[in-house]
Amino acid sequence: MSRTDDVAILGVGMHPWGKWGRNFVEYGIVAAEAALADARISWADIQYVAGAVTIRNGYPGFIAGATFSQALGWKGNRVASCYAACASGAQALDVARAQILAGLCDVALVVGADTTPKGFFAPVSGDRPDDPDWLRFRLLGATNPTYFALYARRRMELYGASPEDFALVKVKNAKHGSANPNARYRKEVTIDEVMASPTVADPLRLLDICATSDGAAAIVLTSLEFARRHTTRPVRIRAISTVTPTFPQTVIEMPNFATDSAAAVAPPERAFKDAIAWAAYEQAGIGPEDLDVAEVYDLSTALELDWYENIGLCKAGEAERLLRDGDTAIGGRIPVNPSGGLACFGEAIPAQAIAQVCELTWQLRGQAGERQIEGATVGLSCNQGLFGHGSSVIVTR
Image (cartoon, rainbow, N blue to C red; front, side):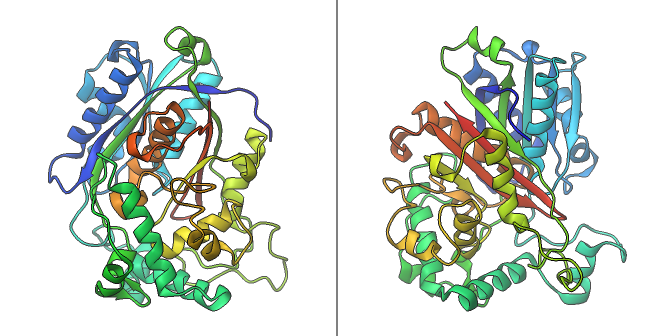
């Protein structure tokens, strides 16, 4: 599948991440109004709203597109509400982009916001014995950090990664996030501080694992024709990948209990996490060598190292060297998570994929302040939602 056309990012906005204890709609409206102001248009100009769904905030969260439209003021615009776990924001972006490319609208607003409970995510309430996500909590007691630790152990076994390597990821991201006004955690840390934090799921410690947060992000997407009437050089979305796995999956994915058998069918050419970014590269007509910046889903420090290889920045087993050489820090060859990543934000599930694209937009515009990557013109975001939801966006300027 090749690229047929681009859409423009005319405006971006966020509500800072934290634990504010307020309704998620309030955060979403702050982000939406910031994106509208950045685009220099009004709510009256929006023809379509795509809301990324939150499942922990009652019925309004399930119908996010309509919820945000009502909060901004009913006016007859069309809506969609998208749920794909951590990939929800990318799904919402993809739906809005399709509406524009189909000629059904010129201006769309994409919003994701969340209010989260204290501590790690627990199963949604109720008894659901046919729900794998419910079962992994109830039968295995396997919280998200349990899976993160399994991936970390796998990396240690296959490639010789160490807890100190994982800690160095946190050090890098904390330094980046210290300069981000939207980040929840804005304090630099040392390797010793990471290593001294409590063990949560061996080998991962508290500072290796992202928190759960409140926050919101929003983007105004438009046709190129509309954008050219408002700006001379818009940031463009060149590709959005929302691919699913190919059977058999030979690496376990949360919340599964086991992998697929490869006894009768050979594994695919690319594993699921590799395929997510490669589908975006194919659509955009570029490769990893063209990237200037990347935002990846660092649910844990060890997972960030996996993502370096999944998006093609290096060969398998070389991520630690890339990190130690400073290549993925601001000022390095290919900075990763200049925003500070989830290490500094925490998870606000429906907002995070949108927030990644906000950061890339600021970077490509030259508006990232102390985090700025000089000369950035091509950026990629990548993450993954439960139950086989891929998420990758490529933006250019």
